[in-house]
Length: 224
Image (cartoon, rainbow, N blue to C red; front, top):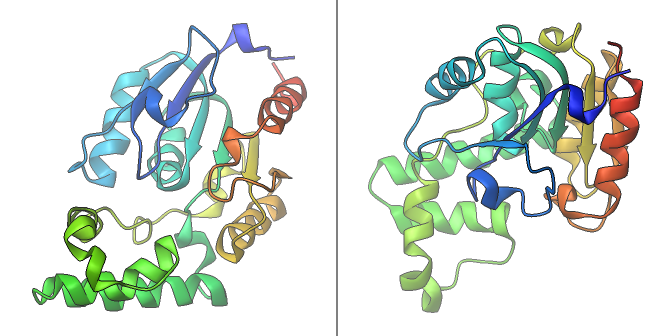
């Protein structure tokens, strides 16, 4: 069986915190943390990931949109397994109502941003992504956040397909709070992935005490 010391743990952040800052509870001193440039494309991230790992054997952890370059790169790497935390693999779940609703709202918001209406963009996007309505009194404070989200990578349109993981042992960890991620998890489970729900931290179940135990159980299930 694969043990933690037999593979290199590689951590790929989502759309917020980067590098080791995105994984504050990882205690493995040999772990490696990737940090993508904020303006890098998904294709650039995938290529950088392949180049960075080279021929080393890795157990890859990826959060949210970080799952997109991770899955795209996995076939070019020696991947012992994948741990996908709330993976934003929207391409594999097109047609699912929750997913289409999310994509529709973001598309509407992005169109407003492209037209120069950043405030209108934020009024549409903020309730979806952060909860609560747009408040004019907080606009000056939130404008830099809106500017970043207006140009950040979208997690769809990258030709990710569920069959890409058919030969890779995969654990999907979700928080049980969002229908989009649970739908994505169900699709991956139908292709053979394991799935653990850790409620209590919403989009960051990796911050919960039960995450380490779930990963350990997954590692013990991996073939050599």
